[in-house]
Length: 616
Image (cartoon, rainbow, N blue to C red; front, side, top):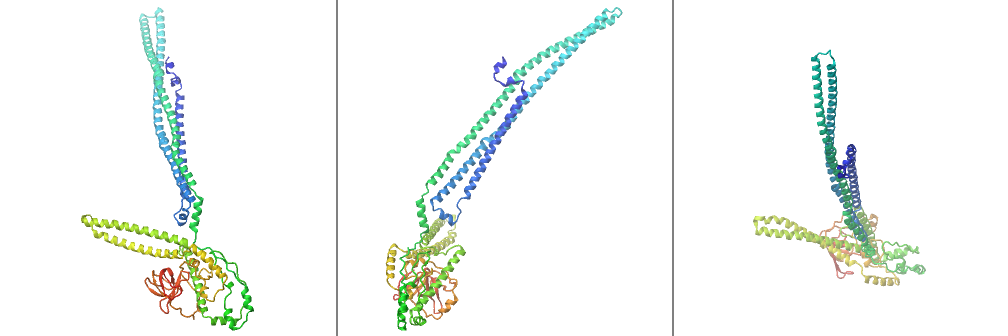
């Protein structure tokens, strides 16, 4: 009846105490195994998140000019967004690891300690009850054996008494003694019987309590403990899945961000950015001139008298190199011309005074070519260009100058904001002297004023360079005008005025000073050396006349051969204007003359000078 009432209670297994102990121990070991499993999963998530973060950090753009240029393109920005989203994605895996640790591992670790303690307590009570019932059984057995012994002793005493009483030879005293001994043994047997009967009833009651009350209660507690363990394992498994499910919305947002970044890539925009980044501002090349090789034949057939030396002195058009588009090599070389008699060459050289001007231009072109080459080599070695960005093409130089001006204006605004704040602070100190000394602010205000003045002078300097670049930038109308000029030059011969046949620093011969020449020669290289043999050839050249004056806007240190040092505000004489190469030849006195950057001086040409104009 009791077992039917208990139903599926573990009391049915009251005789399987040891097996239940082994089963509960296996349950605890399973909890430990699951805890270890979750711990290893957490470590995997942590390591994965760490590797993802390191990957994102590895491909993050470095802080240099190259990465700044790349950030202009949409696909580079999309990749940067992908890296940032990937970093957030790694953060979600760190959240998974943290939640697994806090919600499962730590909870199960604490629960395992409580579970072991509770199980130990229940089995301690079970063993105690088992020992008590075993002790009661032993006492019952002892009472039973004593009762059995006393009964046997009483029977033997009774038999001995009856034997003595039947024997006629035995004295009456011996018979009485035997009778008393038999009575005593019977009394002892009766007492043992009563004790045995009493203890038997007690043992039966204890045994009934043990198997139907104490042990079922302990087993019920163990059953409840085991069911709670199984329930806790189920909850942890559910939490294990929920931890992943909780981060899915954020992970989805990260993936959506990557998708959105990929969809934001615009090939057309990136192509336009390439044009903006590498647009040089150079004009397209004009028409290639017709080189008339027949003039040499006509000249050889003409009379060879000295009276015709002036005609022979004229250069055939084939001797003049056409203007070339930058980075395009001229592979069309003129054939070897017919040599004229030496007397004709000598007569031409002695009789033609403008030839000296041609030699000066040739010397200037070669010298400035060396100046430009040395400047570029110096820029490559130092790893940075000049302050005015003269090493860049016109369009890129204009952008750099404009960016520098904007940066300086921001610095000026920041300094002015600080000045205004300090001025307000000083006013507060003046009105409330107890708050501070107004004079303590003056040194800082003076320092800020000097900084602002210095920044403004820098802005003026860069604005001057910017105005110079914008003045030299070619326009669309110039391109059409140049086409007409080339057509005219195809039908005319080159005059003997070598001032129009000078060589520019880039090594190409130009017919006239045009905007293309100015764009090619807009740099201000620092000369390093000149060829001594070339200087010796022209030691006897005549002194150039003064064509104007100039004022130095900035100091210039002419450490190298061919240049001259000037101080800011110094007045000098101009003896040769800028021919599109960025250098102006000046003279301080009869013995000191040289080249200075055109952008460093303000030139005032005389009204009767060729091409007279005032420029900065």
